[in-house]
Length: 365
Image (cartoon, rainbow, N blue to C red; front, side):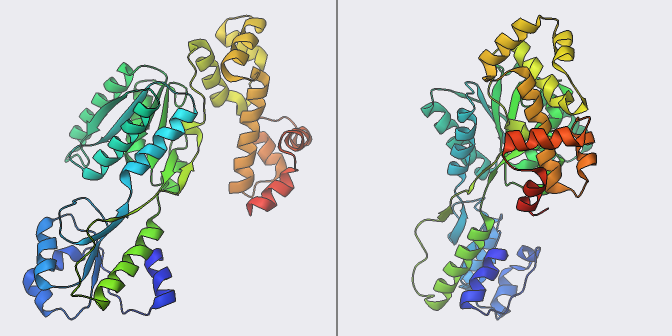
């Protein structure tokens, strides 16, 4: 809708009827008596598309759940979305990959195909699992989660996993918790849509491919305008595909694939407890290994010593709180595991290059 508004600010105005449930009105008799000039719509039922074609009303479809509707279409480049997710995980040095999508959904299949193709180009292979999109009953949902947990346990670790959407990624994270699998150390999860609330509420916060619905709206409005101006011309032969913008990286993939299981466990402990005041001495005690051995293996696996990883985790927490809250520096220091706000400010300036106050102002918090 924002993209349509962008178009109308330049080329408008149009008189619009906006109805999320309007597809139920697109019956043949209703359409014959409707005095509208054009339609932009999500259409899942081919019969609705057929009614629009018979009525001769210019229409642009923007869901792309079906490719044989006989209407002009604008939508996501689903295969490119899959490739972008794979590229993100390949950059993190994963060698095991998996895709989890929805059964009998074209857009999910296209994302899987793009993901698997890019994985193969990188020398890997992709395991896959399909779930029911909308279980009819809670018991069916529970059975699906248990099956997902079993599948996740069987995957080679560490594994980079693409979920077909942010919503489905939440189900995958739930299944990982049930299976006691560490995210992202054992299973790194990336979704699609970059739904801000969903991604931030996820545990851990979810990385996501950023698609471009605003551009889809603009291009759909522009195409509809062209069709309405020249209704006798044939519709475009192929859909207009809109590329994703990029990847929003959050903690669910903020890792490098760690083959050493002890260091993977160390990274998990740091992620979960650094902001609670974890020290290297406590880490050594939990892992039951010598200080020297931990440093050597940690450096070899991650390219930095454990004390630096602890500090990075704490400072990442500081950055998030500076951007997303109005807490005082003393409160932020407490939440991030620093005993004194003064030391937090010194460490932040040394590592980030600016003071916490300047960072907050630059972030617009």
